[in-house]
Image 1: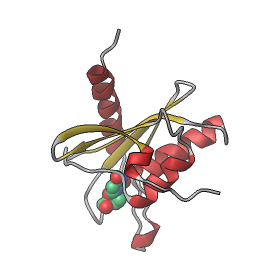
Image 2: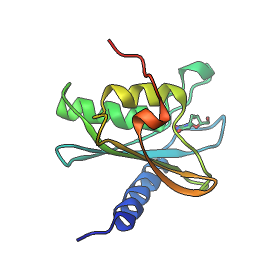
Image 3: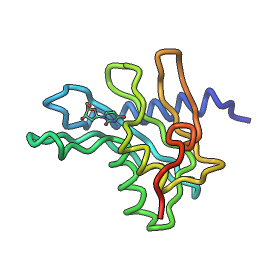
Image 4: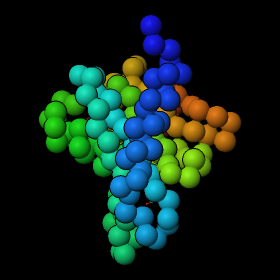
Length: 134
Ligand code: THU
């Protein structure tokens, strides 16, 4: 059986590959994310900045958008991993946490990133308690 460490390494490798396409001329932080859906498909995304800074979209949201485009509105995330070309510790921003929550299964979705203490794999409700929903 494939170990959790092997799966996480493979996810980070794919996310790092995606970060190479990032459009990040302002922050210079090239971020990549990969979503593995409950159906078992993989979709990646990179961050895309804009001269009007607030229009920037993060790698995670772009990966989720790709997954929804391909699988439709019932798409659910099994894993989402985020990393960057510099290997810095980063975690999903608040906006991305809210978007991840919308396409997550509370019990099973895992959000994976590198913290200062090492690799972290958390449930979305740990990252965003009391998420807004309708
Ligand atoms: N960014 C992401 O793409 N994902 C994250 O988890 C954190 C931040 C992007 C947004 C912006 O283009 C750059 O990183 C610096 O904030």
